[in-house]
Image 1 (cartoon, rainbow over the protein chains, first blue to last red):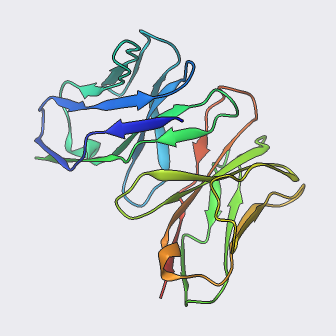
Image 2: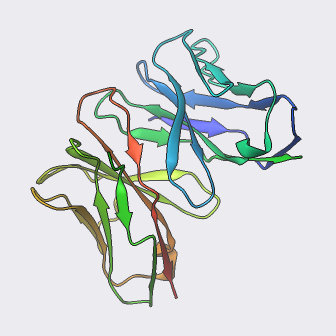
Length: 112
Length: 114
C-alpha cells in the first residue's frame, strides 16, 4: 500500500537558516506529491505540489522536487522566518479520488 | 467565497455520550473526506463521501462511527458512545470531484472526551 515517511521533529532553526525536511514515499503507480502546512489551531493548507517525476513545486520560497529514483520529495527553503513556524506534512494521492496519504508531520520552530 | 466550515471548533463529551461533527464543504464541492489527527501524529483517512453516497469507509472503525453527506446540508460525522481514545482533531476536506482538483481543509473540530 501507499505510505509516507517524514523526518521526526521538532526541527528548531534560527531565522534565516536553511531548511530541509526529508520525505520519502512508497506507492504503486505514479502518485502526485504534496506538502501541506498547518499553523497552530488551523486546518491544513496546500503549500506546493508536483504531479510527475522531476517536477519542482514551489511557493512562498519553499521548494520540493519529485525524485522518482529515490522516491523522495524533500522540502527546502533557503532562509526561514519566524512566521514559518508550523507543522509540515508530506502527502501523496493515489490518483483515484484524491484521497491523500499523509506522513506523520514535522514541527518546525524558528527562533528570532 | 467561504472555505470549508467545520463546527463546532471544540467539543467536549463525557464517556458514553454521542458526538456530532459537522462539515459544510466549499460552494460547488460535492465530495468530502474526513480525517482524524491524534495528538502529535499525522492525519489518518477515515471516510470518503459524495452527496448521498459513501464511496470509501475503509478507514472508519466499524462500530460507533458513522458518516453521511445528505443531498442538502452539511456532512455529519457521528461517534456514538465516545471513549477517551476518540479524543482527537477531526478534519474535513472537500473538492469538486474532478481528479487533481485541490483539496480544501476546514479548521477541524477538536473533540475531548472526559
